[in-house]
Length: 322
Image (cartoon, rainbow, N blue to C red; front, side, top):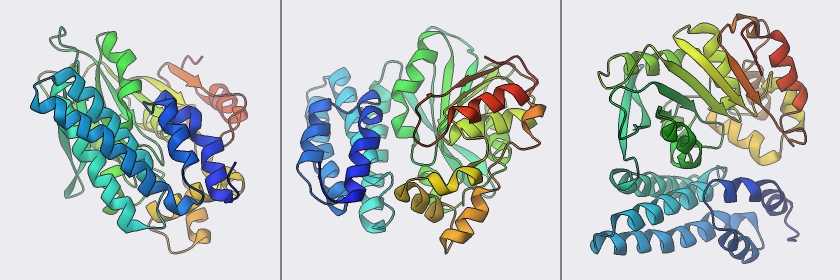
Protein backbone atom coordinates (compact mmCIF):
# COMPACT_ATOMS: atom_id res chain seq x y z
CA UNK A 1 0.00 0.00 0.00
CA UNK A 2 1.43 3.46 -0.93
CA UNK A 3 2.54 5.93 1.72
CA UNK A 4 0.74 8.91 0.13
CA UNK A 5 -2.45 9.21 2.27
CA UNK A 6 -4.56 10.56 -0.60
CA UNK A 7 -3.54 7.74 -2.92
CA UNK A 8 -4.03 5.19 -0.15
CA UNK A 9 -7.53 6.53 0.52
CA UNK A 10 -8.38 6.47 -3.20
CA UNK A 11 -7.33 2.85 -3.62
CA UNK A 12 -9.07 1.73 -0.43
CA UNK A 13 -12.36 3.53 -1.10
CA UNK A 14 -12.83 3.25 -4.84
CA UNK A 15 -11.82 -0.24 -5.97
CA UNK A 16 -15.26 -1.91 -5.74
CA UNK A 17 -16.98 1.05 -7.38
CA UNK A 18 -14.54 1.15 -10.28
CA UNK A 19 -14.95 -2.56 -11.01
CA UNK A 20 -18.75 -2.47 -10.65
CA UNK A 21 -18.94 0.36 -13.17
CA UNK A 22 -16.75 -1.05 -15.92
CA UNK A 23 -13.08 -1.01 -14.91
CA UNK A 24 -11.27 -4.30 -15.48
CA UNK A 25 -9.87 -5.50 -12.14
CA UNK A 26 -6.40 -6.11 -13.57
CA UNK A 27 -6.38 -2.56 -14.94
CA UNK A 28 -7.27 -1.20 -11.52
CA UNK A 29 -4.50 -3.19 -9.88
CA UNK A 30 -1.90 -2.34 -12.52
CA UNK A 31 -2.67 1.38 -12.73
CA UNK A 32 -2.85 1.96 -8.99
CA UNK A 33 0.21 -0.22 -8.46
CA UNK A 34 2.25 1.82 -10.94
CA UNK A 35 2.02 5.15 -9.07
CA UNK A 36 3.28 6.36 -5.71
CA UNK A 37 1.54 9.74 -5.47
CA UNK A 38 -2.03 10.92 -6.02
CA UNK A 39 -0.59 13.61 -8.29
CA UNK A 40 0.10 10.82 -10.81
CA UNK A 41 -3.49 9.55 -10.71
CA UNK A 42 -5.04 11.45 -13.62
CA UNK A 43 -2.14 10.84 -15.98
CA UNK A 44 -1.94 7.12 -15.24
CA UNK A 45 -5.65 6.52 -15.71
CA UNK A 46 -5.71 8.67 -18.85
CA UNK A 47 -2.91 6.58 -20.34
CA UNK A 48 -4.79 3.35 -19.69
CA UNK A 49 -7.96 4.96 -21.05
CA UNK A 50 -6.12 5.87 -24.25
CA UNK A 51 -5.25 2.18 -24.75
CA UNK A 52 -8.93 1.19 -24.67
CA UNK A 53 -9.86 4.18 -26.79
CA UNK A 54 -7.43 3.05 -29.50
CA UNK A 55 -8.89 -0.47 -29.40
CA UNK A 56 -12.30 1.07 -29.94
CA UNK A 57 -11.21 3.26 -32.82
CA UNK A 58 -9.48 0.31 -34.48
CA UNK A 59 -12.71 -1.68 -34.17
CA UNK A 60 -14.71 1.22 -35.62
CA UNK A 61 -12.40 1.33 -38.64
CA UNK A 62 -13.09 -2.37 -39.22
CA UNK A 63 -16.85 -1.81 -38.71
CA UNK A 64 -16.86 -4.06 -35.64
CA UNK A 65 -19.40 -1.78 -34.03
CA UNK A 66 -20.33 -3.77 -30.93
CA UNK A 67 -16.67 -4.23 -29.99
CA UNK A 68 -16.05 -0.57 -30.71
CA UNK A 69 -18.89 0.51 -28.44
CA UNK A 70 -17.63 -1.68 -25.60
CA UNK A 71 -14.05 -0.38 -25.86
CA UNK A 72 -15.06 3.27 -26.22
CA UNK A 73 -17.54 2.99 -23.35
CA UNK A 74 -14.77 1.55 -21.18
CA UNK A 75 -12.37 4.28 -22.27
CA UNK A 76 -14.92 6.93 -21.30
CA UNK A 77 -15.28 5.39 -17.83
CA UNK A 78 -11.48 5.31 -17.39
CA UNK A 79 -11.13 8.95 -18.44
CA UNK A 80 -13.95 9.75 -16.02
CA UNK A 81 -12.18 8.05 -13.14
CA UNK A 82 -9.00 9.87 -14.14
CA UNK A 83 -10.71 13.22 -13.66
CA UNK A 84 -13.55 12.76 -11.20
CA UNK A 85 -11.98 14.17 -8.00
CA UNK A 86 -8.80 15.61 -9.50
CA UNK A 87 -9.93 19.18 -8.88
CA UNK A 88 -6.55 20.43 -7.64
CA UNK A 89 -5.15 20.26 -11.21
CA UNK A 90 -7.83 21.79 -13.40
CA UNK A 91 -5.84 21.49 -16.63
CA UNK A 92 -5.43 17.72 -16.28
CA UNK A 93 -8.96 17.28 -15.00
CA UNK A 94 -10.55 19.18 -17.87
CA UNK A 95 -8.46 17.36 -20.48
CA UNK A 96 -9.54 13.97 -19.15
CA UNK A 97 -13.14 15.15 -18.78
CA UNK A 98 -13.19 16.26 -22.41
CA UNK A 99 -11.95 12.84 -23.50
CA UNK A 100 -14.54 10.97 -21.46
CA UNK A 101 -17.34 12.93 -23.15
CA UNK A 102 -15.82 12.30 -26.58
CA UNK A 103 -15.44 8.53 -26.06
CA UNK A 104 -18.93 8.02 -24.69
CA UNK A 105 -20.36 10.07 -27.54
CA UNK A 106 -18.52 7.90 -30.08
CA UNK A 107 -19.94 4.79 -28.41
CA UNK A 108 -23.57 5.94 -28.21
CA UNK A 109 -24.78 5.02 -31.74
CA UNK A 110 -23.40 1.50 -31.37
CA UNK A 111 -24.62 0.64 -27.88
CA UNK A 112 -27.45 -1.85 -27.48
CA UNK A 113 -29.79 -0.04 -27.25
CA UNK A 114 -28.17 3.08 -28.73
CA UNK A 115 -28.01 6.39 -26.94
CA UNK A 116 -28.71 9.98 -27.89
CA UNK A 117 -27.01 13.06 -26.47
CA UNK A 118 -29.61 15.63 -25.39
CA UNK A 119 -29.20 19.20 -24.25
CA UNK A 120 -31.88 20.44 -21.86
CA UNK A 121 -32.64 24.18 -21.69
CA UNK A 122 -31.78 25.56 -18.24
CA UNK A 123 -31.32 29.14 -17.07
CA UNK A 124 -30.19 30.44 -20.45
CA UNK A 125 -27.79 27.56 -21.05
CA UNK A 126 -28.18 23.78 -21.17
CA UNK A 127 -27.75 20.64 -19.08
CA UNK A 128 -26.29 17.66 -20.93
CA UNK A 129 -27.80 14.19 -20.76
CA UNK A 130 -27.92 10.81 -22.46
CA UNK A 131 -31.26 9.33 -23.49
CA UNK A 132 -31.59 5.62 -24.23
CA UNK A 133 -34.77 3.77 -25.19
CA UNK A 134 -35.54 0.05 -25.44
CA UNK A 135 -35.60 -0.84 -29.13
CA UNK A 136 -38.92 -2.68 -28.87
CA UNK A 137 -40.85 -0.08 -26.84
CA UNK A 138 -42.81 2.47 -28.88
CA UNK A 139 -43.49 5.06 -26.14
CA UNK A 140 -41.81 3.82 -22.97
CA UNK A 141 -41.98 5.15 -19.44
CA UNK A 142 -38.80 6.89 -18.42
CA UNK A 143 -36.41 6.93 -15.50
CA UNK A 144 -34.70 10.30 -14.96
CA UNK A 145 -31.30 9.59 -13.41
CA UNK A 146 -29.41 11.97 -11.12
CA UNK A 147 -25.67 11.44 -10.70
CA UNK A 148 -23.66 12.32 -7.59
CA UNK A 149 -20.86 14.67 -6.60
CA UNK A 150 -18.18 12.71 -8.43
CA UNK A 151 -20.18 10.71 -10.97
CA UNK A 152 -21.24 11.77 -14.46
CA UNK A 153 -23.46 10.58 -17.29
CA UNK A 154 -20.50 8.68 -18.77
CA UNK A 155 -20.43 6.37 -15.74
CA UNK A 156 -24.06 5.30 -16.02
CA UNK A 157 -24.04 2.26 -18.31
CA UNK A 158 -24.28 -0.31 -15.51
CA UNK A 159 -27.06 1.65 -13.83
CA UNK A 160 -29.06 2.11 -17.05
CA UNK A 161 -29.02 -1.57 -18.05
CA UNK A 162 -31.59 -2.96 -15.55
CA UNK A 163 -34.16 -0.34 -16.52
CA UNK A 164 -33.62 -0.71 -20.26
CA UNK A 165 -33.97 -4.48 -19.99
CA UNK A 166 -37.38 -3.97 -18.37
CA UNK A 167 -38.78 -1.69 -21.05
CA UNK A 168 -38.02 1.69 -19.49
CA UNK A 169 -36.15 4.53 -21.17
CA UNK A 170 -33.35 6.20 -19.23
CA UNK A 171 -32.29 9.83 -19.18
CA UNK A 172 -29.11 10.31 -17.17
CA UNK A 173 -28.24 13.99 -16.87
CA UNK A 174 -25.79 16.35 -15.20
CA UNK A 175 -27.21 19.12 -13.06
CA UNK A 176 -25.55 22.09 -11.36
CA UNK A 177 -22.03 21.28 -10.18
CA UNK A 178 -21.93 17.99 -12.09
CA UNK A 179 -20.11 16.89 -15.24
CA UNK A 180 -20.40 19.40 -18.05
CA UNK A 181 -22.56 21.69 -15.91
CA UNK A 182 -19.92 22.09 -13.18
CA UNK A 183 -18.27 24.95 -15.05
CA UNK A 184 -21.42 27.07 -15.46
CA UNK A 185 -23.52 26.20 -12.42
CA UNK A 186 -22.65 25.70 -8.77
CA UNK A 187 -24.01 22.84 -6.66
CA UNK A 188 -27.40 23.76 -5.21
CA UNK A 189 -29.49 22.10 -2.54
CA UNK A 190 -32.85 22.83 -4.19
CA UNK A 191 -32.28 20.25 -6.90
CA UNK A 192 -35.98 20.24 -7.72
CA UNK A 193 -35.21 23.31 -9.88
CA UNK A 194 -33.03 21.53 -12.48
CA UNK A 195 -35.20 18.39 -12.27
CA UNK A 196 -38.22 20.50 -13.25
CA UNK A 197 -36.35 21.57 -16.39
CA UNK A 198 -35.54 17.92 -17.18
CA UNK A 199 -39.14 16.73 -16.79
CA UNK A 200 -40.38 19.72 -18.81
CA UNK A 201 -38.01 18.49 -21.54
CA UNK A 202 -39.38 14.93 -21.27
CA UNK A 203 -42.94 16.24 -21.67
CA UNK A 204 -41.99 17.78 -25.00
CA UNK A 205 -40.81 14.42 -26.40
CA UNK A 206 -43.47 12.54 -28.37
CA UNK A 207 -41.49 9.27 -28.08
CA UNK A 208 -41.64 9.10 -24.26
CA UNK A 209 -44.54 8.51 -21.87
CA UNK A 210 -44.35 11.58 -19.66
CA UNK A 211 -47.25 10.26 -17.56
CA UNK A 212 -44.92 7.58 -16.20
CA UNK A 213 -41.75 9.28 -14.96
CA UNK A 214 -39.55 7.69 -12.31
CA UNK A 215 -36.58 9.32 -10.58
CA UNK A 216 -33.34 7.58 -9.60
CA UNK A 217 -30.23 8.91 -7.90
CA UNK A 218 -26.92 7.55 -6.63
CA UNK A 219 -24.66 8.90 -3.87
CA UNK A 220 -25.33 12.64 -3.66
CA UNK A 221 -27.90 11.92 -6.36
CA UNK A 222 -29.51 9.71 -3.71
CA UNK A 223 -30.32 13.00 -1.99
CA UNK A 224 -31.22 14.83 -5.18
CA UNK A 225 -33.79 12.25 -6.34
CA UNK A 226 -35.99 12.19 -3.21
CA UNK A 227 -35.57 15.94 -2.87
CA UNK A 228 -37.04 16.38 -6.37
CA UNK A 229 -39.81 13.84 -5.67
CA UNK A 230 -40.89 15.89 -2.65
CA UNK A 231 -41.63 18.89 -4.87
CA UNK A 232 -42.48 17.55 -8.35
CA UNK A 233 -45.51 15.29 -8.30
CA UNK A 234 -44.94 14.30 -11.92
CA UNK A 235 -42.42 11.85 -10.44
CA UNK A 236 -44.45 8.66 -9.89
CA UNK A 237 -41.76 6.58 -8.16
CA UNK A 238 -38.29 7.18 -6.77
CA UNK A 239 -35.11 5.24 -6.00
CA UNK A 240 -32.56 6.72 -3.58
CA UNK A 241 -29.23 4.87 -3.63
CA UNK A 242 -26.73 5.76 -0.91
CA UNK A 243 -27.87 9.35 -0.44
CA UNK A 244 -27.39 11.56 2.65
CA UNK A 245 -30.30 13.00 4.59
CA UNK A 246 -28.34 16.12 5.51
CA UNK A 247 -25.01 16.64 3.71
CA UNK A 248 -23.95 19.38 6.09
CA UNK A 249 -24.29 17.04 9.07
CA UNK A 250 -21.96 14.58 7.32
CA UNK A 251 -19.36 17.24 6.46
CA UNK A 252 -16.75 16.62 9.16
CA UNK A 253 -16.58 12.91 8.37
CA UNK A 254 -16.09 13.30 4.63
CA UNK A 255 -12.79 12.35 2.95
CA UNK A 256 -10.51 15.29 2.13
CA UNK A 257 -10.83 14.69 -1.62
CA UNK A 258 -14.62 14.73 -1.38
CA UNK A 259 -14.76 17.98 0.62
CA UNK A 260 -12.41 19.72 -1.81
CA UNK A 261 -14.36 18.53 -4.85
CA UNK A 262 -17.55 19.81 -3.24
CA UNK A 263 -15.91 23.17 -2.58
CA UNK A 264 -14.74 23.55 -6.17
CA UNK A 265 -18.07 22.42 -7.65
CA UNK A 266 -19.94 24.72 -5.27
CA UNK A 267 -17.85 27.61 -6.68
CA UNK A 268 -16.81 28.44 -3.11
CA UNK A 269 -13.58 30.18 -2.10
CA UNK A 270 -13.11 28.38 1.22
CA UNK A 271 -13.95 25.18 3.01
CA UNK A 272 -16.09 27.16 5.47
CA UNK A 273 -18.13 28.62 2.62
CA UNK A 274 -18.47 25.12 1.17
CA UNK A 275 -19.68 23.83 4.54
CA UNK A 276 -22.42 26.47 4.48
CA UNK A 277 -23.51 25.33 1.05
CA UNK A 278 -23.44 21.70 2.18
CA UNK A 279 -25.98 22.57 4.86
CA UNK A 280 -28.48 23.53 2.12
CA UNK A 281 -28.48 19.93 0.87
CA UNK A 282 -30.98 18.67 3.40
CA UNK A 283 -34.25 16.76 3.56
CA UNK A 284 -35.10 18.35 6.91
CA UNK A 285 -38.74 19.45 6.73
CA UNK A 286 -38.91 18.10 3.16
CA UNK A 287 -38.98 14.30 3.35
CA UNK A 288 -42.56 14.26 4.62
CA UNK A 289 -43.66 15.74 1.29
CA UNK A 290 -42.58 12.60 -0.59
CA UNK A 291 -45.81 10.77 -1.41
CA UNK A 292 -44.77 8.51 -4.30
CA UNK A 293 -43.43 4.97 -3.79
CA UNK A 294 -39.83 5.23 -2.60
CA UNK A 295 -37.15 2.51 -2.77
CA UNK A 296 -34.18 3.32 -0.51
CA UNK A 297 -30.87 1.48 -0.85
CA UNK A 298 -27.89 1.94 1.49
CA UNK A 299 -24.93 -0.10 2.66
CA UNK A 300 -24.77 -0.82 6.37
CA UNK A 301 -20.98 -0.25 6.23
CA UNK A 302 -21.03 2.77 3.88
CA UNK A 303 -17.97 4.89 4.69
CA UNK A 304 -19.61 8.23 3.87
CA UNK A 305 -23.40 7.94 4.24
CA UNK A 306 -24.53 6.11 7.39
CA UNK A 307 -27.41 3.66 7.19
CA UNK A 308 -29.20 5.84 9.74
CA UNK A 309 -29.76 8.43 6.99
CA UNK A 310 -31.63 5.87 4.87
CA UNK A 311 -33.64 4.73 7.89
CA UNK A 312 -34.63 8.29 8.69
CA UNK A 313 -35.74 8.92 5.12
CA UNK A 314 -37.88 5.77 5.26
CA UNK A 315 -39.50 6.94 8.51
CA UNK A 316 -40.24 10.48 7.38
CA UNK A 317 -41.40 9.95 3.80
CA UNK A 318 -45.18 9.65 3.55
CA UNK A 319 -45.23 7.47 0.44
CA UNK A 320 -44.89 3.70 0.50
CA UNK A 321 -41.21 3.01 1.13
CA UNK A 322 -39.00 -0.05 1.27
